[in-house]
Length: 216
Image (cartoon, rainbow, N blue to C red):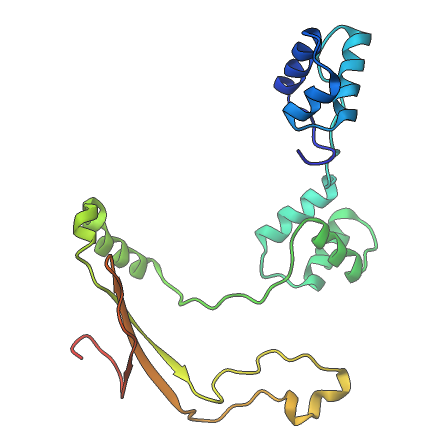
């Protein structure tokens, strides 16, 4: 059990029951996987109050206050907002002078972090409906029938140059260092591969010349 976590009432009852049966505090702590100090404190409270009710305010205090929760809600609602835009909103909403660094720390305190967005093809409602209607007939397929399916896919890999170098670790002065450039050419050499898998396992990876379509 994590440090500072509240003890469930069920554990309180077990501790008191074993204590009333004459079991030592050390054995109680060992059997319930609790610290000796925790068991001692619960038994001490039982001796003083004669009850196993949990005192108000026990347990770890909330990490986020009301302002942090409001900030977190805003960040989740507007996921693509910049820190500067969030700072402007926070200053108006909380009626306080807040710096970008303050908001950045508050965002981290809300257990949020800025990431580079994943790129995914945009699907409009018509495309989504077509995919739904295509997949719906397969909803009632049995496991045995799915085992007859061969799953295949192809992928294009750009050789040598490709999309390498999107990120680089450097100093501010190294921006014109050739080793820090993102290498790119107009028509990079590429390699097309095709692979498959089924319920029996994975198939071989095949290198393909040219493009791959349903007929090929």
